Image (cartoon, rainbow, N blue to C red; front, side):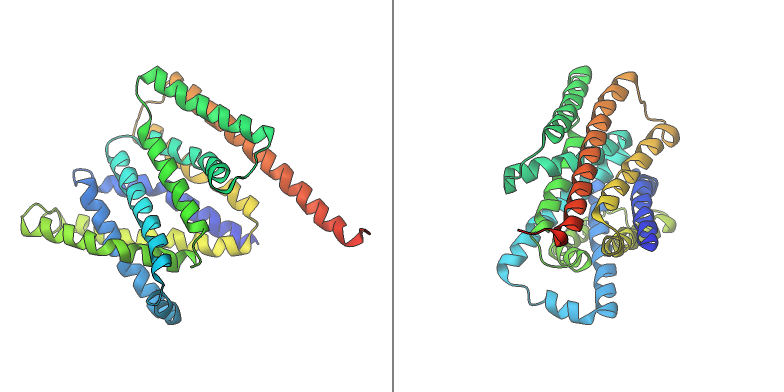
Amino acid sequence: MRRGVWQGLLAYTIWGLFPIYWKLFHGIPALEVLAHRILWSFVALALTVAVARPESLRTLLRQPGRRVALYAVAAVLIGVNWFLYVWGVNAGFVVETSLGYFMTPLVNVLLGVVVFRERLSKAQWLAVALAAAGVVYLTIAYGAVPWIALGLAVTFGSYGLAKKKAPLTAVDGLTLETALLVVPAFAYLAVLQSTAQASFLRVPTQTEVFLVAGGLITIVPLLLFASAVRLVPLSIIGLLQYVSPTIQLILGVLLFKEPFTRVQLTGFGLVWAALALFAADSLKNRSRETGDRKQAPGRRN
């Protein structure tokens, strides 16, 4: 299990450090960066699947229409999420992007209630209320909705919902998703290139290399995460997921010198309190379920 913990920690650490990487493309339109990320992620994923698991490649090519439609929805959601993230980072909103990923677990809870009719405990409802209070407070204090944070949380939470119903592994699923996005991404890059509006081949070679390497940067933490979830309990993965937005917040404040005022601290504090309450309640419920399972063999009905 120790190996899985380290793999999960490394995956979330890499995701947390992503703002440093995407800042390298400051000045390049976010949509163009997104198109390159999709293109080179697809190339890296397709090569990985073809070399490591060629049987999976054959399976991907035989997906029924309904399954492809489900992955098309997931593809759109992750594409919008990637765009918001890259745009937010390069527009100077790293702190707000971190808020989005702090909020994602609570969005997942709400989606579970709406879609799967799941019931929440009083503590979980209180956690949702605290998070909502944090967003409302920030909206009133700044006179604007933190739409980047909300957009990231909703798109990634909805993406997780789509993946919950999807049968393929994380790597195979993302390969299919990028395959569905790669044609419009390539077409967009081709149009930019033909009209001399593309940054590629017109920026320093180092930047071009980083654009191409964005595909590898995308799949490395995914592969680490896919391995980690098979080795460690989901409760540990649930705690590790807060590593990424925490690193992003630190980077935004200390490295990129974004403001973090008392108002933001109050708003974030309400969300953090919600997460702490939610995590404590989840751990309590899992401990209770574990205890029930241990007692079950000795029970007599």
